Length: 632
Image 1 (spheres, one colour):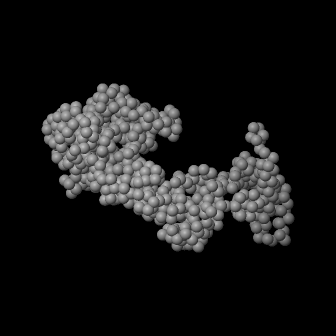
Image 2 (cartoon, helix red, strand yellow):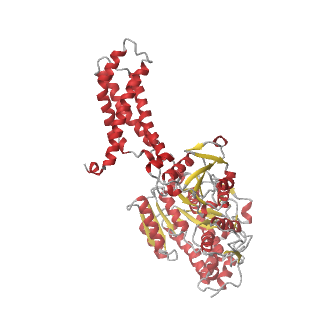
Image 3 (spheres, one colour):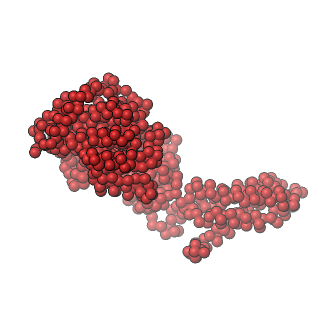
């Protein structure tokens, strides 16, 4: 009764009209179906009898269809936004009374109606009822219909171009036409020659992807919407470059899964973000293999509130762990991640935030004794290269000795699998941070050979959007008007997105041949100068014209080029069963000598001076420390 009271007179009048219209369409459909069955031979001897039989039963048949429409909610559908699901729903509403008529026809009607006429009538009802709604929808979106409705004309100063003339492109056009805030689509581009000169919902396809700049100029395009969900990697990068070069506002689909659904009024598209500039091919995971060691297990993630750690937690939750432990010294980020996971999965999820430091062995023992994790992902570390050059003792205490604490505690409490996150800076290190991470890799190999725990390290390069990474710095500098500071015009780095890195870490954890150092395929290195120019153009500036790029020199411990493997690993590196994960050959370690050196390093870390750096250099012969930067 509450719903009936809410129906306005206008809505009630509209629904009454539709009921009357549908009744007329049902009557016409059955009569026309019988006429088709007779093949127009109305002079046949059986025609008067069957026509009279139809007339006699049409009232209850019509009522049956209308009841089905009412119960099925046909008159509550907003056909302006209807899609294929609504048509399937309409088909179901028609199928039910059609079946009832069939059984009543055989069991109760004397003389029997033609089954063929009944089936043809059902098809006609679907076409006429659905077609009447579609025709109204087309009329509403037509300029004449918009004038009748009093809709203000589209802003001619905001013409939109759609990149892609497939299903996603058609959906994007409908979204724009339904919500004028997105602008007025006037042209589309696509690389399919069969689509040239064709129209999609009234929008013509005017060229190829390579012709984006020319089409923008010809039609005075204000904004561009990229609507090709399958566009990935270098191809997407190239299309983004073409779009950004036009100085038009550029958007992409916010969620490709929305394509084909109803037309959302908000949030259909999003602005480009830096990750889009370095798009890579989508990672394919062996989900069964990952589920085998995560589903139902207790998983501990150290540094769980950080950039990589938090994404690892999100990815782990996809595989339904028995319990997820987020371990971090910094409470705010860990708390925010907990709120995010609760919002997505519900407040009763098996997630616990534990505050503590990997430097504190007693705290680690408490955690392991209380929760008994079977899988550990170790992402906690000091990572900022220049800061660790000034505070090498802190890098050693946290990265080296903290990792040793964690490994000892894990091995003492029956952890099955331990995955250490490493970095390309551990290869031939020039920084304290990189050197400490190389020692962590060595720790992994020593524990793998002397415990029952499967211990592996995963080595990869920079991740986009992590705390302190170069892209957020560039963005902040551009928004302040510049200059954009670059350490060296020739500097190069490997990049991948945070989700990609986290997914491949999980996959490497599934491979888990104890003692292995897994190296992720980072693709081709990226020139930071090129990346800076892309970002500058994205924000509407021109490098060197109205946005300065200033070269400030390499920072302490920083390399021009990063490496993913050491010289002795090059020839022996082998690919695993996953095409983006390689494994470095194990290196022989003199265990007794290594542990003596660790004790000496621990003693040296009691003071933040050159003694720490000198001890690191003794342990890692390939370490070439930066001189003169330590300040005590």
